[in-house]
Length: 321
Image 1 (tube, rainbow, N blue to C red):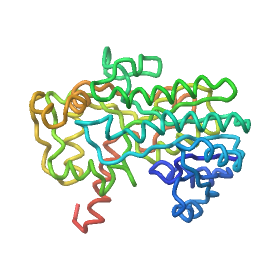
Image 2: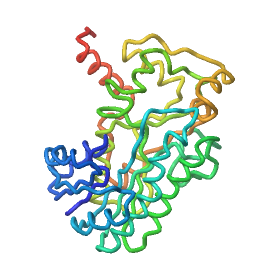
Image 3: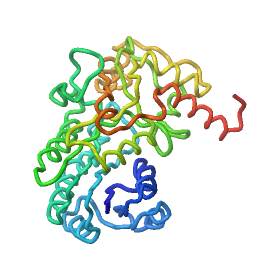
Image 4: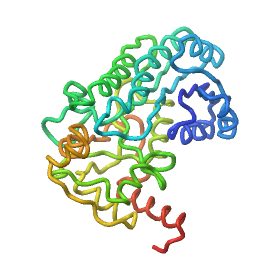
C-alpha cells in the first residue's frame, strides 16, 4: 500500500518508516523541514515537505502522495515543564487540532481509506480501578493544567473516529522510552532520574503504562495493515505505580534511589499536574491490541526495557555493568 506518514522524522517516524518499507509498503514521509529530506530518503521514504499547520501545503502534500493510508504522528514536544504543562504542549496541541483537521480534509479529498492517529494513555479519568480498557471514560476530567492538552487529544480521537469515509484507528500509546525519546540514553527524563531530580511524590500511587518506541512502531504497522476501526491501547503488559517503576529505573541507570517528597512539596516542585500524574494516574490494558491487531510487545515489561536502557547507557559511557 501507499502510506503517508505525517511527522515522519520524529522519534516514532524514525522507527515506523523503515518497518513499513520492510513490510513492502511505498512510504511517503511528510516533514516541515527541507533539511530532513536526506534523513527520510535514508529511512526508505519519499520525502514530502509541508507545514502541517498550513492547510494548502498539507492539501498539496497529500494530493502529491495520493496515499491509501495516512498515519498521523505529528508532535512538537519540547522540554517537559510539568508546572506549565499546557504551555509546554501548546505547539503539539495545535498539531493535534488544526493539523488533524488539515490532514483529514486532504485525506478525504484523495479518497484515503484508512487513517491511523497517535493518542496517549494518560487521558483516562482518574476514578475506579488502576488499569483501564478502551471502554472506560477518557478525557472528561483532565487534571488542572492539562485541560488544553487532553482536549487536543480528544479532538484527534473524536475527529478520526467520526470520519465515516475512512477506517479510523486511534492508538493510545504508553509512555515512550528508547531512541530519540525523553527516556532514551541521553534523554531529558533519563538525566533527571540520574541527577535525582525525578522524585516519588506522596505515595507514588499513580499508575503508568510504558511501551518501547520500537514496539509501538510495530503496533502501528499492524494498525496500518489490519484491525477494525476504533481505539487501541498500545502499552506493555505491566502497568505499574511510580513507587514501583521509578526506583527500578534509577537502579538500571546506576543512579541513587529517587528522593521521596510529600504531596505538598511535590506541588511546589512539579505543580498540580505533575503531582496528579505521580499519585492519581491510571494505567491501561493492552488486551484489545493483542487480540485485534495481532500484536504483542517484544519487551513485555518496562523491567526488561529499563535493563536494556541501562546496559546501553553503560556501553556508551564505557562503564562496567
